[in-house]
Image (cartoon, rainbow over all chains, first blue to last red; front, side, top):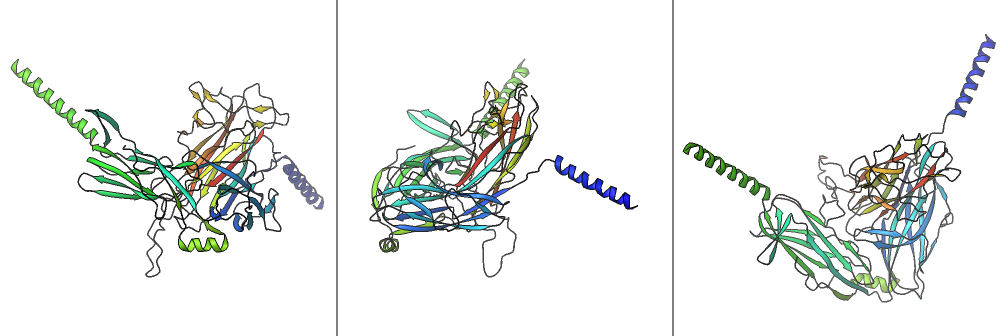
Length: 327
Length: 223
């Protein structure tokens, strides 16, 4: 009996050992990182130094993290950015943490919360103007030694840092409306005048693009107003989104259901008759208003076409019946 | 559209009085978070699995694997998630699997334009996106793109992007001390999720071996 137990135990141990050797590792490691604040804006004098705390939380599995700061430049008009591969800016960055260094990985366990104390030193001789950075927390990818063909993920989360360097506190606000328009159903030309037609019940996507021609970021304030022929009026408030220096950006309204990056606002509802669409934009207190407007005519095109077809068919039937009667 | 009236101007603006005093005394002003939305929810990015296992590849037999990407953002801020490969799928002898061109011809895809990839004789490595905030060119699960290749180098391509993660910016119900509101509202949607499907299809001439690459996802709140 004792021999059987020893034999069985040995067999189980050998089997477990064999299974351990032959089973592939199963990876289901999840990465979940959070960073706060998501954006920091600062106006600073040359020669000054500030300290900003970034809270980084690991809500996934334990992972090594690297902290980096990189300059970025705005791209296109939808708030995209190109992140530089190196820190080439004259602004100096360092971490005040004793246990954290730039570019060097440190382990973050599950649910770990760490604060990166970012010291920013602006040199005395730095040219005045805007400097844009992104503070990045990057995971180190898993060792790529798994069998089979695999794609491994490296995740980076970032927080934007917008810095305006000014000796006096004065900032340049130089902007223009680069585009204010909507997408009509079609356009017709009559007697030398162009009419823009929209289908009565269809959505009307509106685009407002602000161009910043200055050296400092600007925030547009204002609204888009839709006025109908019967005195109806609807106003949509613009979000004061940052338009960075020497760039342009499509500005959104506070419309909650518009999640499209392509449109400022999507006008919904049933419209009939002539409408004017205007926008008033300024860049802060005491700044002049920029103004732009456009017009459209809302017609129930589908209904009109359907009604015309019904009338035509009815006339045709009546004519045919009369003709048959006459024969 | 009428021409904008007074559409360009230059203005030197001072700060508000309080801010100006602070700037004069301290030499700086710092503002954290988006000024037009209050939120204490941090910007969070999640990758459901850091390894997408395509298994042992068989010639002309496409293999797929999926992962989920999730973004949570309590503020109304815009965000972008980009993806790029650090190199093509490569084995230990530096043989690599080409990035897909999809079905080719009129269905030739690029790093920024998805096209259909259904032919088993079209070889390569690419990805499809389905779910929330994905690029519009991923019309259905047959549409694929190759990853932007950082060795070329190519710019990382946006794979998720939205102006507003939080569908409902107003807490539902609005916070109120007295009386406590009945909890009848729809919970705030503060997370958006998409699914990325990796696909590899090799030719009979492809060298044997374990091929790997690293996909670098960068999630950034916009400015």
